[in-house]
Image 1 (cartoon, one colour):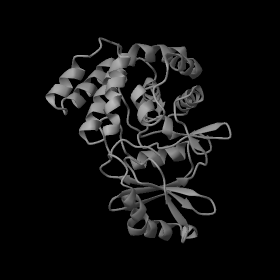
Image 2 (cartoon, rainbow, N blue to C red):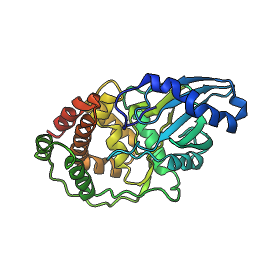
Image 3 (tube, one colour):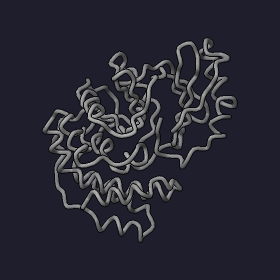
Image 4 (cartoon, one colour):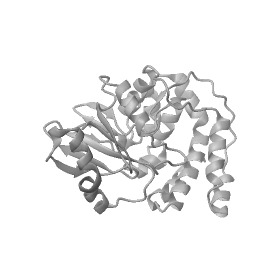
Length: 296
């Protein structure tokens, strides 16, 4: 379970949350889980996440009201909608309920048994292709996938940084011009390695808190990002691994477009990592260097 808001893991906070806030609300709505053990799950940089060890294990996630970042949304109701939309596809967990407390919405969904990926692999990229081929649901945000929109977003992030740090990244701006030409598709929005659960040769995507309708290259940019593979995995992909992943995607129009936009995606991610460091999340410091190095 991942996220991009809160710096570090406040473990004590995660241990006390179910007793103080979540458990009474969840047990009132789902009496069959009353008395079950609650287990804090690793990750949860934005949203506290727990496993409820009932007969059929569930995940309880508090979608914090303050979890938005410049690059990743934190929209509980969109996540609930997409879990319903993808029910039975195997691409996402099954939604059980959506509840509310003053601190935010509570999502209850099926626990997916397995291991998180420690690096993006070709099979993960093939799962993304399946997501991108899925029927488009109603009422999700629509993203502009043009190079101009990526540049605008990056500059907006840079404006929030200290001048010297912003200038160092700003000077690395690549010169890429590409319109938003692809047919919009369903995208996950946050397919870092740790958001893939692997079990019995099958992969399931979790943490759907920022789904959108847009350019599938956006998902490839996150999945292949050197910084995201370092922060949420074992380290950046090698050039050969990148090639294998793009070949595995199986749609040359999309993969070729990604290759053209990649310098801008790296530039934007460098800015985002610098923003994260300014928020106190030092895990992202190496990400700035990794993304800028990928530009060269």
